Amino acid sequence: MVAAACGHRAGQTPTPKPTAPLPTAAIAGQQVSIFPLTLVAAEDSLHWETALADREASLARADSIIGTLIKVRAPEVVWVLPAELRRAARRAPSVATDPDRMSTSLLRAENLDVVPDPLRSQLRTLEAIAGGRYALIPAALIYRRPGPAPAAGQPAGPDPSAPRTTDHPPGLAELSLVLVDVRLGRISWRTVARGAGDDPWSALTRAVKSLTPGLP
Image (tube, rainbow, N blue to C red; front, side, top):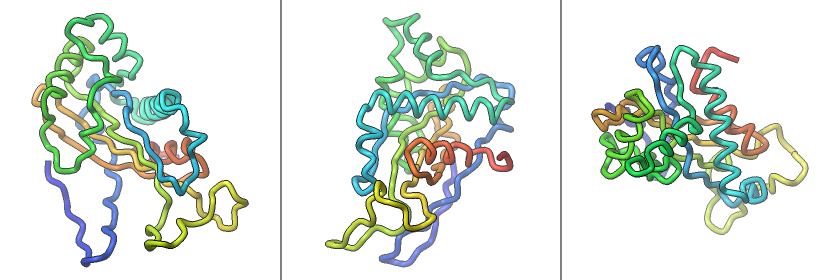
């Protein structure tokens, strides 16, 4: 997989790469598993601790948004949602790893082209049970405050819970996604989908929608 580098001057924040659309033409008609998210985090300056306090509930809600939108907006692919993957793992508990317990978050590292073991063998085993060759893996969901980071000793910005004084949403969702060919153990596509919103879920919804440009 070839990654394009973004040039920038020393001391400047690199310009984020544009979100790459889902490569649906390459996987149309094939069964592709969407794995559950295992990592969600937010910058303290967003003050979204209450919304994300229950980790299991946050992961479940994120899975629902990701799976529902992708399935509706890219119907040319036969998507297998996280709930179906969990059922597949339960059918063979002696050999299959629970997808919620896999170390899929490590795939967010941009320098990874090959899935390391034991994750590689875990993915291959579960996909052999569930069927299909490809896995779409949300490796991480990170919420940040839009705009440049504040200088040391400076306030992080207005409290998002305070009355709005601008038209800019307070939070930016960054969803790291990879498409893995589980037979080869290689990452064939990766991107970071971004979307801004007044709360975690509207921001994530906009991020997922950015994967299918041209649709409302």
